Image (tube, one colour):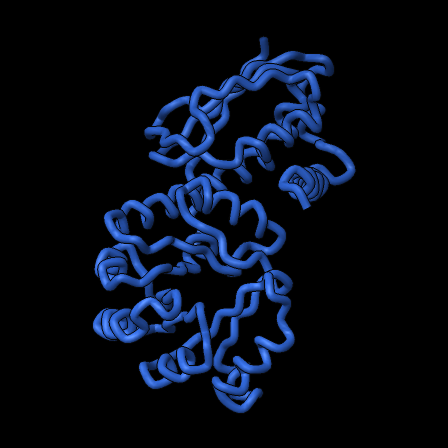
Amino acid sequence: MPLTTHIRANVKAALEEDIGSGDLTAQLIPEGSKARATVITREDAVLCGTLWFEECFRTLAPDCRIDWKVAEGRTAEANQTLCEIAGDARALLSAERPALNFLQTLSAVATLTRRYVDAAQGHKAKIMDTRKTLPGLRHAQKYAVTVGGGHNQRTGLFDGVLIKENHIATAGGIGKVMELAFRVTPPHIPIQIEVENMAELDEALLAGAKLILLDNFTVADMKLAVEHAAGRAELEASGGITLDNIPLIAATGVDRISIGALTKDVNAIDLSMRLSLS
């Protein structure tokens, strides 16, 4: 499904949630009034979510004009103007909150991702997202991760296999679960298995695993794992990743680092819109 379809669905749900049967407060504005509005950021941020923002306004005011002063994916400084909007006053006010909600949330994801990417710079490890997303906003948040310089893992349970401890226990061990996974999974679908120690890593390698998640390994054990795997599989670090320790983790030589906080621990960027009748 193309991203534009998800954008329309996200915006439709957001406008229905906020406006419902009608914007009662907008009735305080004379009908037919025209207005100009300015959106600024109160803090440094990587701008993301402009397509969702525009869809909110153009759904209610198709002829409104939006002039972006900062491009998608670029960093804006605190108190910088992000865009100027002109159009029907009632429509602009009705669209304001849903539009800002998308922009502040997706900019937060892109901004945090960029910080992790910068902190791991100089090493080969890719910064990866997870499925720990806000309900209904998975595609939006995963898009924001890419804007911040990160990479997407599987979207859901349908486009990738991640074998975790419960799957291993149910199947009767790493060897058996890998054998079953190879047999029932379509060849174009990636298969990843989670291991918790060096012994399990060795079992996974012997079973033919090509993508292995190192769950809560220490930095020292990650380095040992990289040396032991010797390129036989891609190794991904996961669990307890922070901006403080990611340089050390990236330096171990792992291929990927997955961070649930990118989309789960969202601290929205502080944005503000100021409107005046024209």
